[in-house]
Every structure is written in C-alpha cells, then in structure tokens.
Image (cartoon, rainbow, N blue to C red; front, side, top):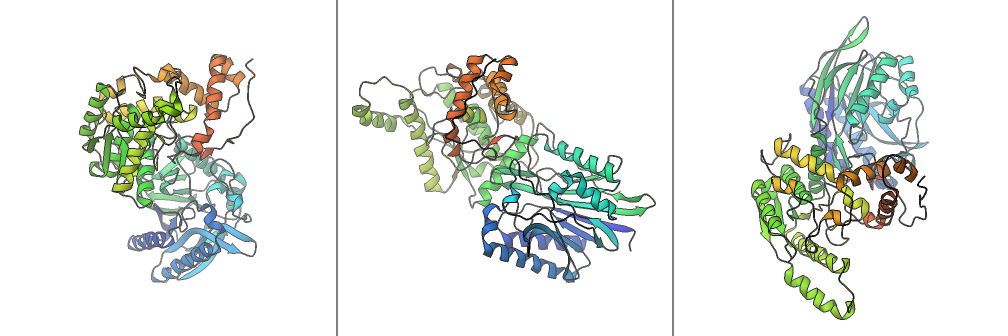
Length: 555
C-alpha cells in the first residue's frame, strides 16, 4: 500500500475510427507518464475508438480490431511501472460495452463497464451498448480506485456505491461535448458528488472536433469542500499531472496546476475554430475557400478560418453582381487585407445574365421574384465549388443560425460547402463575436491581432444584395427580435401561447413558426457545423421534414 500517488490525465484529441493513430497518441502519453514517474495514466472515454463511433460499432471487424488494439497497448505496460486506465469498447457474453480496461505489468488486471448509458440529446448509447452492473472499485498500487464512466457520475447511486465499497478516489473518463455554460454545469455536478461521497474526483475530458461536436477538454480535479486542485487547458490538448497524499482524512492533492478557464466570451470563438480546424484536417484537407461578400457572416468565418489555419491557407473570393454595392466591394477587400489572405474578384454578371436569357422562354412574362434572386446565389455556389474542386480547398459555408432557422438561405447556393462554423450561432451573437475578436487575440490563434473585421461591416445593415437596396429587414423582423423569438421557440420549446404571453405579436410568432417548419428540408441538406447550444440543428434538434403538427393557439 502506498500513501502517495502521482496521477497523469491524457487530455488528447483522438479521431473516431483511427485505431492506429489513437494508439500512437496513447503510446506517446504512456512514455510521457513513465518519464514523469506517474503511478496511473488515464485516457478519456472510448479513447481508442474515438468518441463517438456511431454505426462503426455495428462492424464486427472494427470491434475486433479495437479490442486487439487495447490488448496490444495493455501489453506495453510491461516496460513501465505505470498502471493504465484505458477507456475503449469491450465485448463479453452479455454484449458490447462502453468500458475501461486496467492494465499493469503487461496484463489486463480489471475491466469495468459503464453502468448508465445516456440516450438523450446527442447521446444514444443504448443503440449500441449493454449496460454493466454497479461496478466495484479497482485496487491500484494498494489504493481502492473507483472508475465511473462519464454519465455514471450524473447518477448519485453509482458514485455512492463505489464509495460504500471502499473507493478512496474517483477517476472519471469523459467524452463531454461543449456547449454554452457546459463547463460550469460539470463543475456543479462534480461539486455535488464530492460533497455527497466525501472523496476526491478527477474529471478527464477529451478535446477536439468530431463532425458537429466539439470537445473542450478543461479537465479538472476537485476535493470535498469545493476545493479545485487542478484545472486543465480549455480547447487544447494537455497532459495533466497531480500528486496525491493519503492523510487522516483521506486523500488530498499536494501538487496540481490550476489553469484559468477560457472565458464565456472567448469560448464560442474557440469552439468554432477548433471544430473547423479538426473537421478540415481530419478529413484530409489543409486549406479552405469561401465567398467574402462584405457582410458580417462571411467576414467572421474568414477570421475564424485564419485563426484556425493561418492566412496562407485561406482563400477569399468576392463574387459581385450588379446589385453588389461599392461599399461591400470595399469592405470585403479591406477585410481580406486585414487578415492577410489571398483575395480574388470573380464577377458573376455574365453567367447570371446568360442564364436568365436562356430561361426567359420558360419564365415567360412572370414578374421577377426569388427565382431570379436565387440564380445569383447559385451561380456564386457554382464558382466557389469549381475553385474548391480545382484547387482542393474545402468550401466553407457562411450562414448563421437565425437565417438557417427561417430558411433565409439558398439551397445549392450560399448553402454550398463542406462545413459551416456559424451554423449554431444566432445573428446577434455573430455581431458580438466580431466585436470581441477585434479587441482580443484568442488562444491557439494563427491569425493577426488587432482589428480583423472592418468596423463598417459591423455597423451597416445586413443585406443579401440580391435586388436593389435590399435589406434583411425587408422580409424579416429586426434580428434582436428574431433571435429572441427563435431562442424561445427553439431553445426553450415554448408554445405559441407562451410566446405571445411574453410579449411577441401573435402574427409574428405564427409567421416565424411556419418559416422554421418549412425550412427543415433545407437544414437536412446543410453542411455540418459546431454545436454551441443544446438545441443545435442536426445534433440536438431533430424534427421530421414532413410534419403535420401546427401550434396555432395564441391565447
């Protein structure tokens, strides 16, 4: 039995399905743990497979390869004194499990299975896994260690059982995605568990982007009495060491580093940049292209792309038509110069006019409407996709959540692209982040400091510029009103009657509800983007396209 433990947490960025790549990350961490004279090394939830593998878990070959990879890493502990806690999938006679293996001296000495399988929001583990029993602690270096897995600590009974069975410390691997205020939710949860069970809890979270989810890391350790003893980095990989001493009142941390959490103002920007960077790199691209219109959304996406990849990996293209204002042309050029990116101008005048000429016999004498306007947007999409195909750049989409909610976007036009950093960001939040970025240089940024988005872009009224003097508010309510209404309707799932009672005009509520409902088919065809709120379109909010439900009760 020992009275001191040195525990290493590997807050790393695995890639779903990349067993050999994740194994290489694990080997490097194992070597680091050995060099640091750590007694225990733990990885985040389902580290070897990446979180979450989805229907890869229905492939028998993937399961076999994952189990073999775990066994291979376990054997490599024979070359160190480090005990390995490796979360991975495991299969037994009862089925497939979300599990951890404990390995030391080259052998697997224990397997523990996740008890509570989440099946809400973005989690649907019951589709794949069989729940395990209430687990017993594991003895490591003579110390009784409880290993609840992620969702397990959300249920008082799991940690309570481990404590009653003699666990002296809880080590919890997690795959917890970021969304607004999530870090504080986790802290409150762990505060409750340590207070109830009167033993320390070390919370390890993975980091990185995986499709529409972003994992923010921010791992931490807490002792009873609400004492934060270490805090890992936010939105960055980290190797976190802490030293623990047994005393009369149990285990206390004698050495740990508390890193300041990313602020609530910076966190959405960092989440978007990390999600964008990992999506592009993990899918085999290394540079991006986007249309720079002179508007706020494309300017913010361009700045995020530069922060993610550096200016030499970002290509911005202005695509003017006769309705594009001189101010927009000037603003786009200034934005590109501030960011230091390649900037080209490709006029769509002749292609649009030729298309309209060829369509004239079909359109006949019908008055001009959205059909003609959307041809402009779709021509821009054709040009940008052409550049993407020819130069091998991923095309970025630049529409925000407010627009996507009400269908204020052109399918096969400005919705073209491989990834949309603003997909889950309301319009007014885009403005706030633009002002924030001009005043701050985010951590882990490859972009310049100072102003990167011209003030005129922030100040001017938003417009798609698809007809003379067009403004978004010609067909939409002011964005502060629209965003407040969308928050009530989408984030809070309020009824029409509730929204009217809160002061929204009934006609407006019914009109926006209709726009949200009929735009579902567009959103299904939209590219992925980082989840920033609990009710992100796609991951977090799944409504049927064909939907007969209408809430028409206004009072």
